[in-house]
Image (cartoon, rainbow, N blue to C red):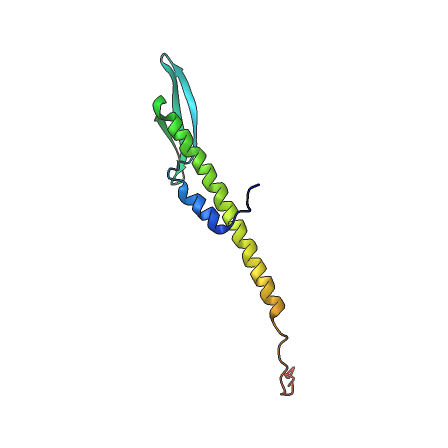
Length: 112
C-alpha cells in the first residue's frame, strides 16, 4: 500500500523530472522509409509545428509524458497546500477568544 503524498514528497518527485516538452506528436504522413512525425505546441500564444526525425520520437514522447506527470504532481501539491492552509485557518478561528467589550458607552451618530 502506498503512503499518502505529502507536499515534501511531491516536491521530491517533481525534482526527479529532468526533461519536459509541451504539446503533442503525431504522424504527419507516411513516406517510403516510414512515417514522418510532427510536434505541435503553443509558444507565445501561437501554434508551432516542428518536424521530428523518427529516431527522436520516443524521446519526445517520454518528455511529453513527463510534462503530463509534472502537471499532475503540481495539481496534487497545490491541493495539499490548499487543504493544509484551510485547516490551519479553521483551527486558528476556533482558538480566537471573543472580542473584549469596551467599558466606554456607545454614542449615537446624529442623523441630521
